[in-house]
Amino acid sequence: MPTLVDLNPAMFGRSFKAERRALGRTQKDIAVAAGCRRQTIVDLEAGRNVSMHTVFAALAALGKGLEIADARPDLDQVHLLLDDDDEG
Image (cartoon, rainbow, N blue to C red):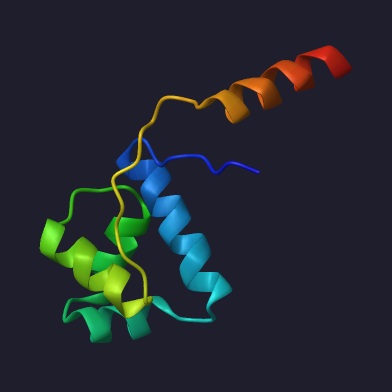
């Protein structure tokens, strides 16, 4: 199934938090690994403004990276949306 693209800081923060929790890591773990304060990770997860350096360091602490993706739906996603409408 296609994945959704995080289109704003709040969505990114929620995705980051979910991934961190899925990996069993605490905010403090990530902060120590990223060289920042725990409050900075709290801010990142809340979609608040943090530096790009912090975002990249926090992602690296999770063993993740960043990819630029097209936010427009592809044909598979359009078909899924249309199929959902047909079931209702």
